[in-house]
Length: 222
Image 1 (cartoon, one colour):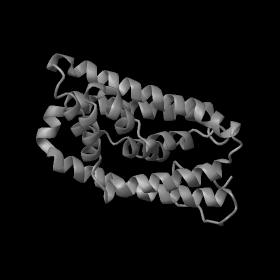
Image 2 (image 1 turned 90 degrees about the vertical axis):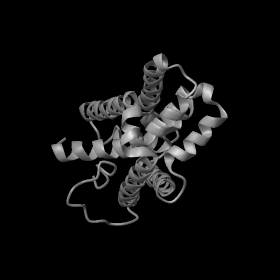
Image 3 (image 1 turned 60 degrees about the horizontal axis):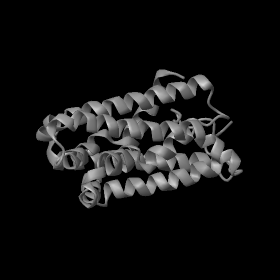
């Protein structure tokens, strides 16, 4: 795996997890939590999200094979879901607004829902991590590298949550919303590339390989 592929995988994971968009959700969720417990609150949320995503990394391929599903089919379905997810980021309510509304309903469980899920361990992140760690195209070493990149993104998320008050004062809710929508545009592009790669893998289309291979379509033409 070269540096370009590493960067693209990191960007993919960063976009689907969206650490910046999680900050307003965290700030709302800890409103009724004593300040001395904020660090533990953030650690708990990130730890739960990490556990969920690593379970998908380890067991996602097994689930596909148990159900008799082809990766190409999953790649297309995953791309469609990622695209719809991206559309909600771009045109719908911003991630912070939607998930703050969810937090208002049950703020006592805010570290788990909606902070850990679906704010950090989002449906898009779960799908992306399964596609990025296909057993048939990725070696154990490459999957371990993907797991490492995932943990790096989660550490960035944790760092932002621990500095949430400072970061929010700089960018504000509007800034977080703008960043989330820009990430939605990037995610939509990644999703379309995933759909085309899945069609190529299933033989529906014969697509010329891109100049730089997408992390979500590696091995599609093999």
